Amino acid sequence: MDIRLQSVSHSYGETEVMRDITLDIPSGKIVCIVGPSGCGKSTLLRFIGGLEKPDQGDILQMGEPPRNCLNPLTYIFQDFALLPWRTVWGNISLVLEDHDIRGTRAKTIIQDVLTRTKLSDFAHALPKQLSGGMKQRVAIARALAVNPAVMLMDEPLSALDSQTRELLMDDLIALWTRTPFTAVYVTHNLAEAVRLGHSIVVLSRRPGQIREIVTIDKPLA
Ligand code: ADP
Ligand code: ADP
Image (cartoon, rainbow, N blue to C red; front, side):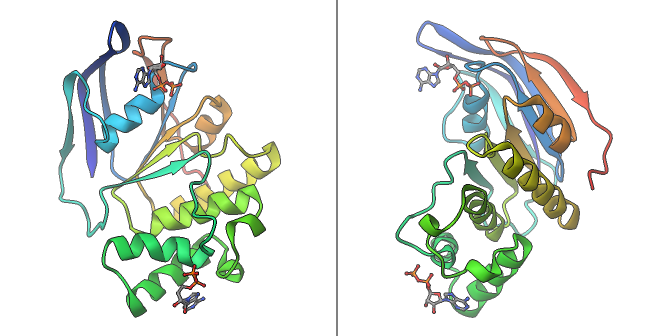
């Protein structure tokens, strides 16, 4: 589903953090948001995700109805946010249970996302038994399981070493190439944005305003 931010502005108390942001997030594309720390990238994701409302402006969900998506939006965070006492399988099955998906239907979905993220051999592992890169693949698998209209990714690779980051970028590109998803990907790392984004939105220092939007020629793979 296409999402449009229309003239979004916001202040926290006296502090103006965002000014007049108008932006389209096209269905099936990865839009990267870059800019200095504190320019409002995470705040923008919270607005898109509906966790918070901006002072001014609108977030519009346009066009086609969500294609059989269970969840309009899913977050992926820097710190993975896995439940430590649950296995890989258990972490994914939990979000499916939230959508009343259990039994064989859940099993089929979980097996599919574990295959796509190359985690089939780790279904019964606990998070502490996994490397950082694998934990983030679990978080990605969990996000894909609910077939979200938009994946909201906040610095998803920033906690990982550079070699793991490279591998995860390859994985994300392979996943997107097989089944294109819509994502808003926040990073302070320009190289990551260039590699992953179909477009890159560059925000200025606070108050965050759009300095430029760069379209990158893909295919990625
Ligand atoms: P970024 O993700 O680009 O680093 P943030 O969106 O986290 O930026 O924050 C933008 C600005 O808004 C920062 O100056 C931050 O301190 C401020 N800010 C973010 N959330 C809140 C809040 N809930 N209350 C007050 N100020 C906030
Ligand atoms: P926990 O709930 O402690 O995290 P598991 O994640 O191992 O435990 O299992 C949760 C449920 O999913 C169990 O009922 C289990 O039988 C089922 N399950 C776990 N892994 C698989 C698998 N690879 N294939 C089929 N069913 C599984």
